[in-house]
Image 1 (cartoon, rainbow, N blue to C red):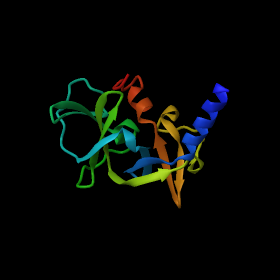
Image 2: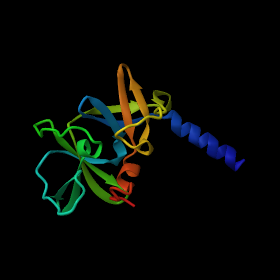
Image 3: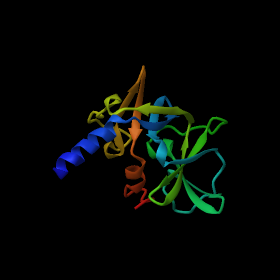
Image 4: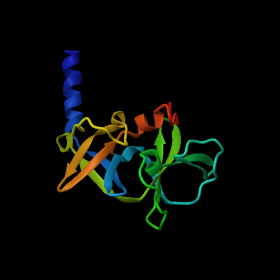
Length: 161
């Protein structure tokens, strides 16, 4: 009886759409759960930290909180980006930790139902497959859905525990 109730609850949860913030890195469009997003800010040069991995640009002081800034282009092995007026930092609140991600631009917020999300095919990718929730489709758009908690908790980052 309890297992049936849990299964029905999970099915009901999947039936409701989830909102995702979409952003671009090069020509690809990615999406993350909007509930992990604290704010979106323009890019400002962070203070560099010695011996930090190459994809960690440094840290910024955000209203008294020291926030590590990750450049997702560098993390995913893409070409270096020229920072311009469209470059933004998505401030995430994940696992009681505040982290910033530099992206080329933010597109919009979209609702995706479980039926809109397909499993990502197995292939060699710059984004580790365990960090990909799946591929979302909206009209003609294909979105790579990123699990930011897994990505930020990965051994090479270890920013959230």
